[in-house]
Image 1 (cartoon, rainbow, N blue to C red):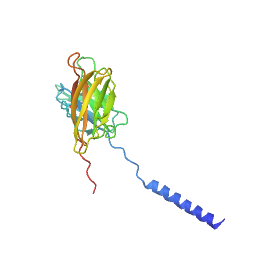
Image 2 (cartoon, one colour):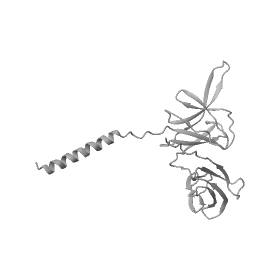
Image 3 (cartoon, helix red, strand yellow):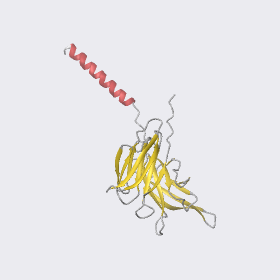
Image 4 (tube, rainbow, N blue to C red):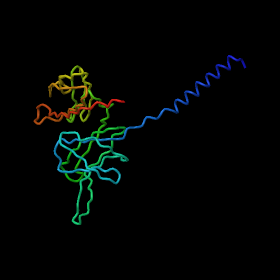
Length: 236
């Protein structure tokens, strides 16, 4: 065999072996453990809730109009909430009061807790959404339309649409110091139902919940759920 061709074959073989060795040396990216937070818009009737993780029942703190601290949940396909019951024989047991599947593919989820007014089902209704940083990054607003009609929004220089029961994430694009951005909400026919100026900052993940008007023909009800994301710790 020609020496030049043999030399090239040896070089190619060595390169391929080195590449394969490098790939084997790379550690696969580990998926972050699932975590969840909860929020309720009203004080719940239950003074203490628990969530189940396998055979363990762990306390969960839910304060009205605030995110609960994110907690991990391992080995479960759903979030199950319980209340504690102590019988006359002092035997402690747990009663299921709410249950919801985990948002598919989410590493971090936010569950909304609603208390049912009618009997016959679990007293708490849970609705979970993907709250991961790549879906809802710092420096953006998430608008939730809890009305029965589609809404149009203009936030700063960005236009968008929010379906009934839907969510829309809008980056604020503010400067490092933060700033106020004007917000307009209108119906599909252009009728204005809300107007305000919202403060935005690069470390903030703020959610705006839009509900039906308290009175027919009035402006929509709005609740702001702010969150400041702490900066990631610097490496050594």
